[in-house]
Every structure is written in structure tokens, then in C-alpha cells.
Length: 253
Image (cartoon, rainbow, N blue to C red; front, side, top):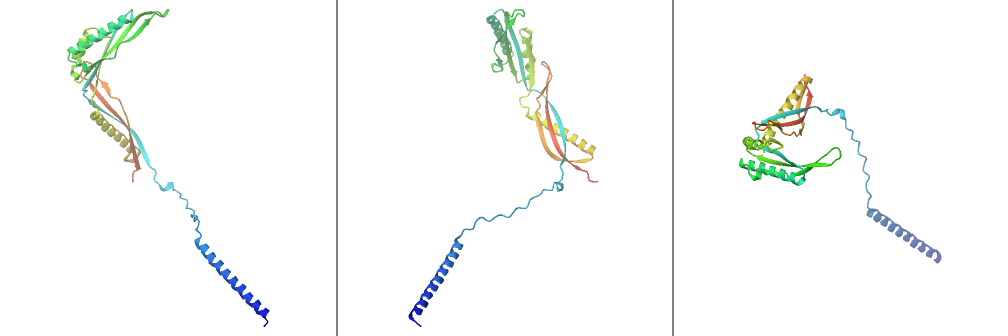
């Protein structure tokens, strides 16, 4: 074998070894690179569509009724309202007359045992009288409102009668109320609830269904109604209105 042939063989061996080495490095790098790749987000599988079958749900049937309740209570508070007026050709004189009448009312009330804290006056207000033909002012009217409060309603007559007898008032009124309506109103609510239940039961029986539980209750506030007038033993009617919804079911055979 000649020297050139030997040299060629050695050269090919080196080239082949280099190729193998490069292939090994490439394979190793490829494995390493593959192991270092961070996987991306995995696509979530599609969720199944939930279908609600309304036919499988029981329909809720209801009855709606209004209930009314009333409790009669004895008033423990009274408010006396008295109006006085003074008239004159001048505003100053009309106001002075009105102020004098206001003081007279206060004095009589004080003589009947009314405390100053339970006496108040709104203050004089003025208005004018005008002639229709030309609108000229012909005089003035001064008005004041005095309020007397009593926690003992039995004293209304004793306080108001001498004021009326003095002929110094334009108008007067006595009203009665309760300082605390909670007890009476709770009684009215209970009566309203019973009224609603009786109505609902009657409707259910007439319709051939069974009355179930209460679904909802709503309240409609009602102002206390005054029963009675001044000088008489008065009573307060405390009322309550409720709207009640009951569930109903078919009667089992």
C-alpha cells in the first residue's frame, strides 16, 4: 500500500470520527433543548352544555291576600290648637291686637295649671284685605296659632272651656294621640295577620287546594285614626294593613 493511500485512509477516518462526534453533540443538544422547553398552556376540553329541564321543577302556586287589623286604645296625649286674629286699618295695630290675644290665651292656660314648656305660639303673620275694584288695601289681619299639649287628657275640658268662654279665639281644636303606639300597633298587626290567614284559608278551600306556608309578607303603614271630639272621652283606632302571600298545593285524593 502506497503512502498516499494510507494517508487518504487516515484522513477519511478522521473525517468520519468528526462526523460521528458532531452527530453525537447534535443529538445531545437536541435532547437537552427538548427537555428545557416549557410546555405551553394545555387547551381545556370543551365543557358540556348544561340544560335545565324546567319540566322537572315543580311550579310554585300562590295566593295573595290583604289583611286588616285594628286595635282601639285609650289616648294618653292631647294637643289643643287655638287660632287668634287681630284686625285693624294698620298693620302695626293689627299685630298688637293679635299679640294681646295670644297673651290672654297663655294666661288662661297657665291659670289652669298648664306649664310654660307645654305652651307655644307660632308667631304673628300678617295679611291684607284688598278692595276688588281697584286692589287698594282696606285693612290688615294678624294671625297667631297657640299650641297647648297635655299628657293628662282628662284636663282638656278644664283648659279649653275658659278660653272659649273668653270669646278671644277665631277657632280651636283638640286632638288625641298615643305617646307610644308600639303596643297597640303590634296588636293591630297580629289582628291583620289573622285576618289574612282566614281569607287565604277560605279561598284555598273554595278552590280545592291546600294552604301552605307563608311566602312573603309586606306591610302598608296606616296613620292612626282619631275617634271622638273635644270634651268627650276619646279613643284612638290604631290600624295595620298587611299583604300576605301563601303557597298552595293540590289536595291529595
